[in-house]
Image (tube, rainbow over all chains, first blue to last red; front, side):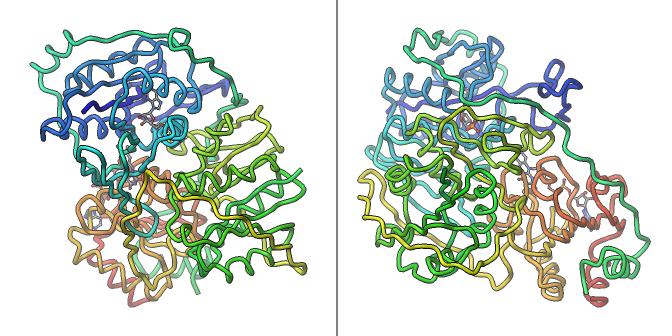
Length: 250
Length: 309
Ligand SMILES: Cc1cc2nc3c(=O)[nH]c(=O)nc-3n(C[C@H](O)[C@H](O)[C@H](O)COP(=O)(O)OP(=O)(O)OC[C@H]3O[C@@H](n4cnc5c(N)ncnc54)[C@H](O)[C@@H]3O)c2cc1C
Ligand SMILES: Nc1ncnc2c1ncn2[C@@H]1O[C@H](COP(=O)(O)O)[C@@H](O)[C@H]1O
């Protein structure tokens, strides 16, 4: 069974984000970049499924500028067998990413497609669902447990208020939540081996995908700052302030 | 020019989020219809029909909508989408799950988690865990969007009653089988709707200690939230997580107990009106957003707080 894993290069989750002074976007020029944490979880899950003998091949795919190939090397160091790189310059909208991934699905015919639930830069939470719709496949988003068999996958999902379990007929799309697993660290020998693994390069044209623009970003601004607060000396003062100053408790 | 709002409900109660969606929708279009998709959801339909400014309530009341899959919900919405210039769902796990399928099938973008409507085609949405606010303009003929409902006031009940129209059933997807759903039972207010939220972090130290929050929450009528670390450590249930990847809350009062204030946590609570932080580390970043900071050991402060409330 073949698994396709989509990974995105994003700003490192712990870097302080700075908005550009001309308000055209976020300044990424010197920011540390990494694999989107939810994609790391997707790669880890694929590797575990292969280690259990349930999957035979893991293909990683990314869409972005040249540097994004670093994240494919990362995915291969973690256990992906080979990669597909789709070269684009722009920050693409989720609908366009989904169309490109759908073209890859068409070519590769994976039984299971794993994605992160959300990219931590754009916070869109869309691509997996859109891909499932375009490929007419069942989906399970926000997965906290994945049980794979030959023709179906049973997924526990984190939903508001509790947990839901779905059984999907393969091929299917699953997006990962934080609770699914704890990604391993890359080992040096595996990083070396990953350098020899194959990255196939495509462009949207080569895949026959026409990209359309749907959204224009007019500006990117800092959120309004909170006014500086105060330190209270003790619980009594806190309660007094909450009652009489903030008036949020009776 | 009509917009469609997808009602949030549990087949019995219409969630306040629906009223916030109506508020957003009325800023986009003159007329707003509400779709109630559920099973035996008459009380929800009645409540929806009374929201001020709603023209029609479209009802899909069928057995396969008790636990609808994303496929079924998307099919239902796609059946009526052509009538609307905007389709709005709450940014809950339900809305986030099915709405992108609708957008993809319509070949339009989805705009996620809008927090403001500037004009009928221009919206504000937080990106980078709320560290930046993007103003985006859509060129699509149908605007499909999820809404951060805490950012909009709730439209109250009005004097008129909307017309109720029944929709035909849609077939269930054959590829997805619903197995089960377990909802945590709680008598406390819902996290995203509560006026007061008290959240605990890793510093609580154990699931047992986490219950120290209960008594304070009882006195305040507060909902209880948690940081990711508290969830990961097994102190709190997953659906209690507040943050970039959990729930976004904006109560009148948010009390963070033993939470350091990582950006991912702040993303979920920094729009709260008043923030209180209780932390023994005076340098904890949470104090930078707190209106009232108390540097103290929670094991001393919480019992004191309980006694004084
Ligand atoms: C992709 C991604 C998504 C994430 N999403 C979320 C999210 O949605 N929500 C979220 O919360 N986190 C999220 N995180 C995790 C986040 O980065 C932090 O790790 C997490 O918020 C830390 O939780 P904490 O503050 O409880 O723990 P810590 O950072 O360990 O802080 C514990 C605090 O407790 C204090 N303390 C300890 N003992 C006491 C005591 N006795 N009395 C008083 N104070 C005490 C300490 O001083 C410390 O400040 C995410 C991370 C990633 C990478
Ligand atoms: N440029 C990209 N290349 C590959 N996968 C992507 C890309 N953008 C998003 N994805 C996948 O879609 C998931 C959700 O992203 P989003 O819907 O943008 O929040 C990510 O975790 C990735 O798995």
